[in-house]
View: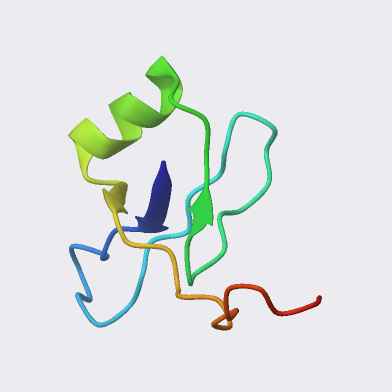
Length: 65
């Protein structure tokens, strides 16, 4: 699942700083995380929000890489 940090309650213009179970900060633009209880709790608590991953470069069908 792709998540982004939620907004700070004291300053809604700023994202929260959220650490994963490996103690690394989540990217402000969001990142893919595993579907685990840890991340579902972060979603429930509002620390992170579900988001759509950014669209990558368009690749035409049949085009060589």
